[in-house]
Length: 430
Image (cartoon, rainbow, N blue to C red; front, top):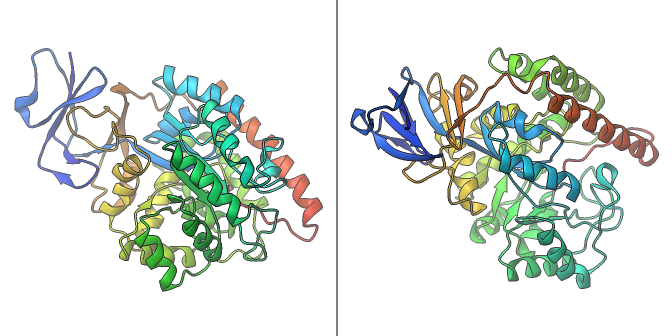
């Protein structure tokens, strides 16, 4: 039979709904309404006046072994990975398909970047793009490896705190054209306003970060007119500026027990060791988010986990808090983590609560439409109708594998950074 979640207020992914109950069966939402939707034999979950939301979608992450399990324990039922190598992507995709205790996954696979370009320090060796002539072959290879969309990495030279080889605009344009010819969305890493302008004019669909420097009115109008979505990643910008987003997670009694002691140590260490010289504080990026939202631009919630000060799953709650602090309403922030990433990335079966949609659901004690931090007060999570055991991940082999892989990555980055920047290593969100 099914499960009926009763005595709840429902946020359907777009707005509050009039329903007080939702019935799920066979992995999907079967009915929404009141007590009349119950069927004899159904299991009843008393929501206790809490709020039922669609499962969250983190629009910008990077894979590590096991982190799909970690993400799910915080209500992130789908992760959108924006750079991972084929072997890890294959393993994670198999896990996402076969394990209801792991979040679902869509990925770009390897992003398109110039030889030696970002994020070579983390991931080299991997295929590079040397010019426009490589575009079609590169896109075809990524699709063959299981990518669902394309990631391109571009930084205007001499602008911003980071300096490494970059694709040129002609190559970005060729990549966009090749991807679009195959019906594939293009997400662009560009950290500065100048770089954002260049990739927007090249035809990309999504900016992977809000710029860290001030966007002028003409650029905001152009982003809006072209229908480009923007993933905030405010929590990672905050972390690279040396701000306390990581410690803030550990200070939260609703999050800390589910984070666990091992990842707690990782958060503390990464906050201490990564501070990028020349990074402006996050308030500039937050002002950009506010102005983009006012101009009608679609803003998506994404964390760029596991960058310094971030964790899969947990950091999305901090990202929502920062989006509201930037000027979004709590409802707009929830849309940015549910229906809008589903719409932008073509995930038609999720991001909403309505009959026929995947039963990816999050039951919250409290009302996040009134207080966004209530998203952290998680009572229950369903992924495809299967309840999540929030205690399974901490202390598991999956946790140990993720932490070990991240430490190897950190060591590689630090060794390379010491050679490049002996007076202080600026990290770099991917």
